Amino acid sequence: MNTVLVFKTSVTKTDEIQQLSAHLDKLIPPNGKWNFDLEDCDRILRVESSRGIVAPIVDLMKSYNHSCDELE
Picture 1 (cartoon, rainbow, N blue to C red):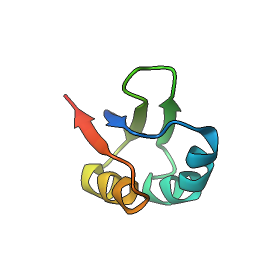
Picture 2 (picture 1 turned 60 degrees about the vertical axis):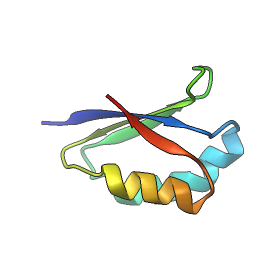
Picture 3 (picture 1 turned 120 degrees about the horizontal axis):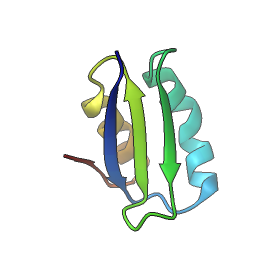
Picture 4 (picture 1 turned 135 degrees about the vertical axis):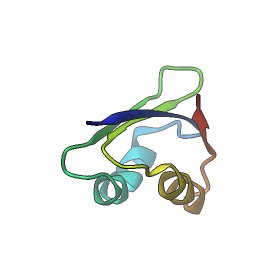
């Protein structure tokens, strides 16, 4: 069963998403998925995953100089 994780990010452009895309694909198991909502004021990253991957996602985003905070 997948859990939905929601993150507030500082990603603003589609080319930034493309830069992160391959890395997110590697982090998230094959039965999971992810997407960004850049139209939302919090520039949401939504992740569906069967395992807890909050810390690796936050670390990845920060390594690309993006803020990333999990929303409850």
